[in-house]
Image (cartoon, rainbow, N blue to C red; front, side, top):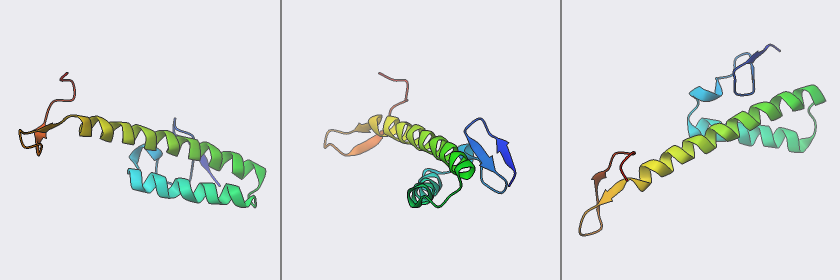
Length: 92
């Protein structure tokens, strides 16, 4: 089992880097990690490694959600209350 540092937790050989994952991919892998850890049938060293990856996945998901929330907050509504476009993210 080869592990490489990714700057976002531990990445094992053959795993997609966390930063390249979509929200759906990251959440699915995070759910698998939680299941493994809850079963308690993983050796300690592997538990630590997958916990670190899980922490990186959680952080990545939170960042993606914040980006989505920022985009939603910038949706401009017309006089009828219907979406009419977006304003720049840096507009107040």
